[in-house]
Image (cartoon, rainbow, N blue to C red; front, side):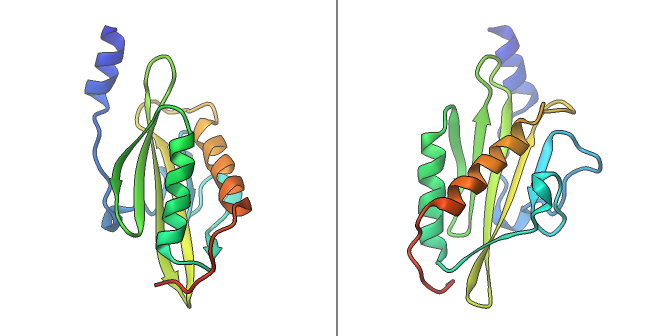
Length: 147
């Protein structure tokens, strides 16, 4: 029990607001995955595009996060959600952030996932991002212009 409390003290929750979405992962990081302008792991994907609005996409992101074990939403805005995943035994926190913006009528999605502690996540964040990308790519989302 003391170990779990220590982990929570050493790695407290800190909400990442939309203006502070991370633009990169630390160089050669083995505990961070980014689908965005400076992709890191995540199969080198730079963005995911949708013909839908923020509301429709965020609804699906929220449903996905609710279906995953040991998750907590730290912050939610119209264009971003910050979710924390905790490992089963020791409750190590991993931040998972989905950020949206409009580009030429389409919604562009960036994803950031990183362990707060340690230097290697044993592929957990990369697997989580891949699982999410597969889910969000297969689900039907209402079509509309990005607003």
